[in-house]
Amino acid sequence: MTRSTAPGKVYLFGEHAVVYGEPAVPCAIERRATVSVERRSDDRLRVEAADLTIDGFAVEYGAGGTDGPEIDVSDGLVSAATAYVDEAIAQARDAAGEDAGFDVLIESEIPLGGGLGSSAAVVVATIDAATRELGHELDRAELAERAFRTEYEVQDGQASRADTFCVTSGGAVRVEGDDCRRIEAPDLPLVVGFDGGAGETGELVAGVGALREEYGFASDTVGAIGDLVREGEAALADGNIEEVGRLMDFNHGLLSALGVSARSLDSMVWAAREAGALGAKLTGAGGGGSIVALDHMEEVETALELTPACEEVFRAELAEEGVRR
Image (tube, rainbow, N blue to C red; front, top):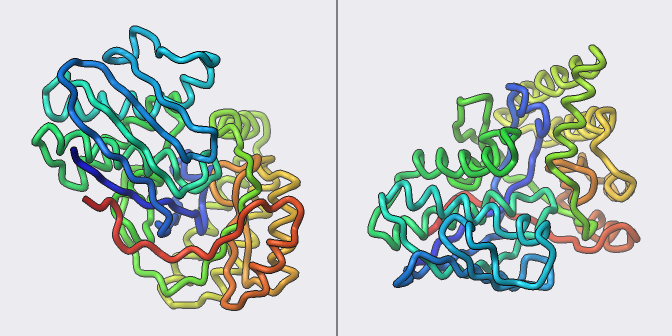
């Protein structure tokens, strides 16, 4: 059996705009998904996940999912729960040149669908563990590339490289199209609030795309987010956390204008700001999920804990190491 872990992530700046070639700056956080993989004697998959903020499931199915999962729940739920793992296993098989079967156990500290990179972490850890179980170890560049292909396939071509590159490499990263690299960042006092829900990433990304097609000012808003990201990079390089916070506030406003925020997210953002956060914004696709705030003190955590829309609050340490074997 082989085991790999990969961290979650938050966006300091740039989600949604990154899909259209603008830069983004996500950073990895020390909340991890761990995937254990053991080769089987046949070509079937058994996937077990007990703590992805859902009730848990165990499912066994044929290579490529062609036999259909043997589980008594709706097809839609099964598809959502297994699509990332199924495609990740396909990438591992392709890399190793073997159509092997696997038992896969997923354990995760990252809320599912909360905008914190749970799918990217599971995909990266699954590909890494499965290829190593077949005696084929990928370097980080190929691992990130195959993880991106997985998300691209599952998300119908709407994925960017940001999430998968970030959780593979760790630290703070800059992504613009195919240009992906780590960048220097100061010690960031990150606080995450999670509303217990999840937005529909595909629908939210498609919604922004439709706005860009219909309104020129929506396209300009996406471009403005890219300009903001470039200012944010300079602030990070200078260690100017106050400016990073101000730009995070601005970024949240632009994302709200594109229709991807939600009442729960806005209420957490304002609770954090009113408690003295240097900045606060949604992170991820939006529509529900998580916010990230900058705060050195405990007041923001307390304020979020007292916010009815917030289900979970935690301080997030920057994960300098990405995938770990």
